[in-house]
Image (cartoon, rainbow, N blue to C red):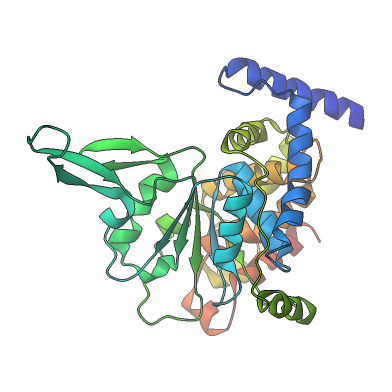
Length: 353
């Protein structure tokens, strides 16, 4: 049986081999990077506590997605500090921040930018010049994403997948790191446009933002009604975040853990599932990207928790956030009041009683 020291030695050897092949990596030692990653959650959580009361699970999942380089869809009723959490996180991480308030009349060029006719820099000669849109930032808050039509929603697809946008026949690379944290109001349906499955699949997580406890709500009201706002210290630079993101794929993950992630995802597909409740209530399950996202996010969570290898607790802890927006329930299931989370619980109980 492998000892902890043996696992640690394998871990650093893997990281070292990865760094040798990539000359762009930082000169910081592997041990310093691991120590930084293991402590980042505690530091940022402590820093955000001055502005954000509660929501520790939400903050941890945002940090996990950040390290894994994944996009996040935050779903919750108005007034639960979804926008404030994202803005405060951007401040603490020294990231350039962009915010787009999605509305029914928003156009794709309002997101990506557009060519304008410019005569100021060519001695009177006319030429087109590209003016960058708000998407050119490190962390983009897409507020109420489902309020804009599909044509405008689609403007984000290339950016989320390729970290680039195309305008006027030219492709422009977005700043690195680039992340989209989008919000959605689940209770207001008038004037909204459901997100297509192709776009939902680009999000690593769908994070549910829930009501605070009574003590947390008391503290929120007490702190936010005195007219003072605690400043946020900048803890991590974009360059350091990129180093940490490059570290994540090097985290060891045993084959049996990868197999568990694959089996979990395959059980969401009604034509493959051996669970009657799944076959009766899901029309379409998650695709292979879900398993990829699950393993990558598990590696990021492992580092945040200061461990050296992924284990089954990481897969189980992230299953709901990775899968809930990738399941298409049948009409009958919706009529009976089923939710994706309930069906994910059913799968987890069947696979790991």
